[in-house]
Length: 384
Image (cartoon, rainbow, N blue to C red; front, side, top):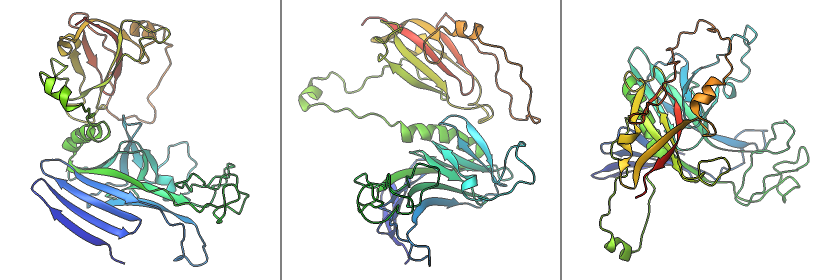
């Protein structure tokens, strides 16, 4: 049957509600002044019956959202690596170590890759990019040129024959045919004897779609990833406390960070940990962009910690630069590193990284971050 469509128009937002079945729907939102289209999807409980496939029995389903565009991506797309660098993917492509000619036996599954934060493609001739930012880790691919898809849910009854006897049949009550005898998984019954009568899980999430000039899309996708996955934390207080407050707003930083630098960590959680600095706070900064990702934002960025943390209550007193995990001074770690013999593999043509690390300048505690670099510090603030 055709999906039902409901359109709601307001001063700040237009919302399109589409219902495909009693277990699959999504809401498309156009928010005034925002550089993205939001798709809020809902899937589940996924029915396990596949009675439209004659002779196949109950197999379950995999649910994907596919977004089609007119871009010519030439079989190339990019996915993020743990929310950091974007990795180039080529449909049906494999490295030079694979035997040739390459036998493509899994044209769908063989082209799916993990997507933690975003997936995108580009049309170089039109200088246009299409990006999907997600709020949860999913599998994604570009099976067709100009198309991106993400698997949002699945419920399967067949084991993958890898030895664990555990099909992906998650349910609301937790029974999912664990320890079922071979051949009996998915049969109706009770926990452990090959069946589960409980409803499958219902999942809901959001995709933010960006369709823009390549440079602009690469700029926006990093900011939107932060906005979607790390929103502002809400705090509440009784009315009596709110009335006594002298101000309802307080800025803790004296100066804004550069647009390509993110404050990753500022915590006292490790003050009492073994080997940590008992009076110091762990501070971690990161560069948001990789080499060649953006014409300006991919350049190294410098931050003066003394100027950023200069307000009463958070005024910086001393800084010690350390390794990423904070367990040894950075200079000491670099001096003790092994020097490996390296070479340029397979006519490497990507933008060259900034190989030389720039250590912190003591005057003003100025830190220079290279593209994608993370830096960790033990800092001490003045007593307020």
